[in-house]
Each structure stands twice: as C-alpha cells, then as structure tokens.
Image 1 (spheres, one colour):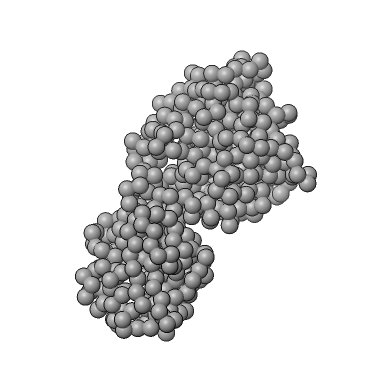
Image 2: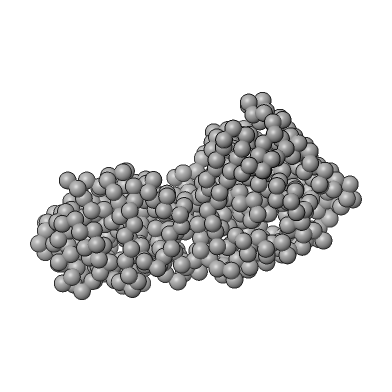
Length: 529
C-alpha cells in the first residue's frame, strides 16, 4: 500500500546549533562530509517517495535539489512559525493523497533500521539527556499515552519517543492534531485513544536536535563509519597505522610543539607501538570541523572572520619559531619532488601526463609541463629559515570552538622526508590552507561539484557557497611573516597540491577528474594573474 513518508524539518534549528552551524533546518545539518538527510535516507531504504518538509523561506541550493532528487525525496514547503502538529497537518493536506498510512521521522533524528513497513507503531529508546522528552506509557501491550517531561526533570524512567511514528490513518491523525490545535504530543494522544499502537524499542537512535546531543550523535556516526585506523570513545581519539614512523612523527609533533602552540593543538595523552602498528592517543574534542562549516554550514561573515583571525594567529606563532635549517629545502621536498613523483605514479597508472589539455576550451599545457612551470614560480633560493610547520593545515584538520573563538589543530605531518621534525616552511602551511579556501578541496571530497571531461577538455563547476568569494578576498589580505596568503607563489604551491592528488584517489575516477580539472582551472587563474 502507498504510504506517506514525512521527514519533518520545517523549522530552523535552535539558537545553540545555529551559532555553531548557521540557520539550517535540522535535516541539513552537517555530519562529516554529508548532510543529515543523506544518513536518514540511507536508513529509509528507498521505500517509495519521501517528502522532506522545509520552511518556505529556506533556499535549497541546486546541488541539494539534485541530491534530494537522486535520493527519491520531494520537498514540501510550509509557512514559518507552525507548531509541529500544525506542520504535519499542513504537509499531509498539501499532498492531498487521501487516507493513507503516514510515517513521520523528526528531522533532527537518525534511527537505524526504522520500521518502514509497519503501521500504528512508535519507536522508543532511552532518554538522550536533560532536555524535554515525551515518555511512553504502555498498558496491556499498547501505548496508552505520551507524557512530556520538562527539561531538567528526571521523569519516571520509561522509554521516550525516539522520533519515528507510523500511523495507519493519515485522516485520523490529521483530525487528532487539529483537535489538539497543533500540539503534536496531545494530538498523538488523541490518536492513541482510537488506535492500538505498539512500542518498538531501539538502542540505535541518535538525536541531533540539541548542541550536546548533536556532538554525541556525530561521534556515534563517526565511530560507526571510521576505518580501523581511528577509534573514538568520546574521551579520546586513537589513531593508528602500520606506518609506524608516520604515527610516531605525528605524535612527536603534538607532544613537542612549543608551549605557546600547545593550546592550539589536540592534547597528547599516549603514544606507542602495538602489534607492529604505531598509534597515538589524543583528547577527543566536541567541536565542529572547518570542512563541515565550509561545505554544509551557513554561519555568517562575522563568524568566518573570527575563524580566519584564529588561523592567522596560529600560523603567525608557528612562523615565529625558527630552526637552523633551510625552509627552501623542506619546500622543495614537499612540493617539487613530491609532485614529480606523484605524476610519474599517475603516468604508470595509464594517464598521459605529457598530453596537452584544455579547460572549458582554453588551451593548457600537459600536467608535466604545468608542474615545471609551477616549480619555476616558487623561490627555492629565498634563504628563508625553517619554521614550525603543521604540514597539513587544511579545513579537515582544523576544529573550531565558537565559545573560545580559537581553533584546535589535529593530524600534523610530523616530518618532511626524513626523521620526525617540527620544522618546515611557512609557505607550505599557507598553501595548504589556501587549497581549502581558493582550491575548494573540501567540496571535491564532499562531492559538491560537477565535472566534465570530453577527450582532453575538462570542465568543473562547484556548488556556490555564499562565504567562498569574500572569504577568498579576506584570505588575500592575510600576511604571515611577509608572505601573502594568496600571493602568486602561494597559489603556485597550492595548484601543485592538486596535481599531486589524483594518484591518491585511484578508487574514485570521478574525483581524479575533478582534481585534474581543478589544477587546470587554478593554473589558468594563476597564469592570467
């Protein structure tokens, strides 16, 4: 039988979450490289069309529209300010499908294996914290009522409604919600009076609707999807690898960073080798990652400028620590030599790196020739001393605390091409950061692009992000130790990072195409400037 399936996301998140991520409907919250609706739809298992209820004032991007269409989701818009029960009534009446079963998933909720084929059933679970919940009272095997427990009160220890409801009659539900004047819990209680509704308990539900529960839920998703190289338990994050030297180098960097940098870094707890695998343990931080905020967030200019100022402060401190070696030597190893080696690896995999290419019809040199030209634009005889270098200073390795207005960095490189070392070249850190802002690396990783290849011609389109243009302008005004954040030299190093990327993504040919296209785009921009 046809079923009405609703994800109720018709209001903007509360102030706590809006401060962190911007004014988003809950189903659009970032969870790693995805939006929450991606995870919700993966659990709903393609059981017919799902209707996502959104505020009519929320502008859905073309990329999100396409993604929702791919997932089998149709959008239903509702007026601002409706109560949840009123929003359900509005959505059901808008669809005009007559009396059908209706399934409702709260937009801030993720439930593993929900009862997509059941009717007259409510999913229940353990309370998620000190917020207000609706406890489920069961009598004689059926749900008798939902009882709202105010925030901060203990309740009676019963299961709480976890955010998934399956009703056999949309008409009876609409009548009940209307009688309750839009109060969802009161309307459900009226429905319960006329229908035997069962409770299904689950341990697998996550609430993203409050600041505390959001970060706990994001941790649970990250833990479930993490490779065996990363383990998180809410207290610590344990990173391990068979590359023992790499792990110990990263750990050494975090442990031995100068004291004025320590408050900007993940706190080291333990390091060692177990069964031939190097590992290190850091304190787990309940903070958003800049890649999440950039790709899927909606924070405003003022917040981004604070983030940029914090990043600038960290890089300035790093540049203020000078070693005895040459920054030029480190940069040559990281940029010129590595790019050459990666391109040769790509050639061995079958790509002709000596073939001339084009971007949107504009002629470009071959990848090998671009690498040579970029190398010529980098001053490797500058006489710059080595400085403390993070080595992978990009959005995905930077956390941000809006309350402290300070970043925290994770996953440093730890060495250039030899033994563990804190030292490198400030120019490399600047280029790594630029490859997130100007190069838009994180959008490629998140799949927020369209790439085209016809023979030797490439095209690339990114999802427009409101922050990107002025953030790029703001970054161009940043100077660290006399180096402009978007100077031609930094842009040349940044472009080389994308030339080096394709061999690392052999499992994703589409992503390889995007990296090539982006390298061509950035090269043409640099050449024109």
